[in-house]
Length: 212
Length: 212
Length: 212
Image (cartoon, rainbow over all chains, first blue to last red; front, side, top):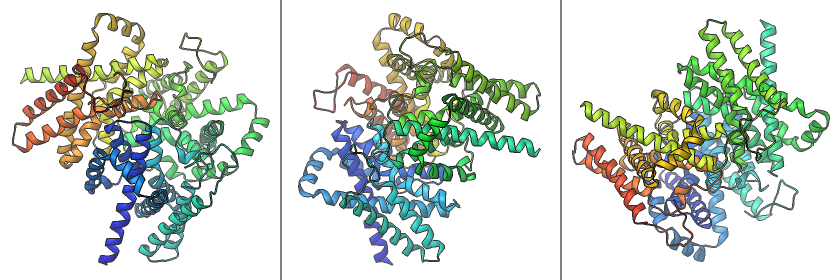
């Protein structure tokens, strides 16, 4: 039990920090100031879950219940410029992609599970799961005044979350133990996302697609 | 009674599909991928009503209660590119404008009616009605990284909804039967919008106005 | 007592009108139509408080309870173009900066006070205070399709609100009378902002910073 909890905690930390790092990187690329870097990192990490909780009327928000996370992100913001340079030098790029894929799996599947618990139908719960996983990035891109990457680049990112959420729904319907279903579906989402990245899958024929 | 219900259902379907089509057309113009086309169509169709329900603390959302609509829009998204081409070839452009005007009337007046039922004052209810009618298009344009059309083109679109909502308020105050008030005000909104389109009314003197 | 109430009312009017004026000015610069000018002014004045109330599940919204404000802003919108020209001729620019700084102090500190009353922790309450003070301007800039000024220009604007909110938290913790704490913290926020403006403080080394 304690090992399962410790593992959940490690995954949660990786998921939150991966989102925050993606916010740091984008905010610095667009030359935001300290306030902008913090807001973009915060919104990328917590935007999806916050929108889901507003839609489902759930409280408290994740970042209100676990306020250590926004405080850590604030501390990281004050160190963000030197830290990003250091991180980019010592951490290989695939490690960021893997951490981001872990975040996608974790947030999407906890999102669909919470939505089913709130009495949503499977289809609506699946959409809430995808929103939890990808909406932080949409808000990040809107604040940075760009067309959200996840809506245009043709990479199966939201689609990986969508299939993972349906896998969770089907497993719980089939009577699989909820914890097993959650971990399997999250792992499947992460694996789908990583395979799509590794083999450069695209749902768009056009040559105009962007690098992610 | 059954005829009235069937008529209401037809109007609702026309209203939802008209919004979704406007989302499809704009998303394809901006070269979104499948995920983007779905999200933009969804947001255009349901964004206004969802914001109204968040502001009024009403649940369930329209698209949660009638989940056939988002499922149909998802199915249409998978067919969107060929379908849009076919639709644009066989459906004359004025039919789209008429369907969109029907959507504006339907959503705005149901919005003001629900807001009055929730105990809002006439002025606030009127603003909620306009939000219900036009905010989906605002969100669509924000996601597509454009200044929202309805805020800048000088065409009386939100203003048609505003007058229609006040007509509904005044008719119910005057003791008119609610169903009659609803249909008259929705029809008046649609007619105002179509006259404004047909005769090219503008509330902006500048030569820089855009075509809608 | 009556004098304190009258003073509160004057500060509230200055705060709301300062935000609305900033919305008018930006909307006209971007060539919005009447609908756009009203929506941008409304969102700048009430967007921060509305987001805070959605996050805290508080109702009614400020603009629902005091609907005279949105009605006055609507009336001002109809006069906005000539009024802005007149206002810019007879009111010196520093008066706008001072009014805006009063608005920042008033909205931020009432925001942190309401959030503490709702049972939020000091850190979360402080963030809600900053959101109340600055989020209207963020929404304004998103609607105008720009990267929000407050996230990129390096001027201590959100930071002034952040320090003012912590001052309020610490004073109430130290047992200071709430009314005194509120007015002191709001005045400190306004003073911090005005000093930052007067002496051109910046938290950004780069030469690319914008004029506010």
